Every structure is written in C-alpha cells, then in structure tokens.
Image (cartoon, rainbow, N blue to C red):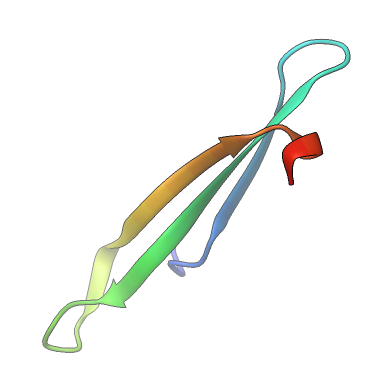
Length: 52
C-alpha cells in the first residue's frame, strides 16, 4: 500500500468460497510532482475467482 501499486486481497467467506478484492491505484504523485503520503485509489472490484 505504501508504494501505490495495485492491492490484491483474498478472503475465504465459507468452506468452499473465496472472494477477491482488487483495488487500482491512480497516482503516488500530486500535480507538483510531490509524493503523496496516502496514494489515491481509482476503484475497487470485488469478484469471485471464477469471474476472473
């Protein structure tokens, strides 16, 4: 999360099912070229492995 790259998470929701959460980064930099303390995030997608 500190580098501002894509975040991939996997959660087991029961004995046979898993859900994935993928969060895309927008940028680690502001308009002046300064590093952001907290990188901006564009979108999060929640899906089942079978949907990938």
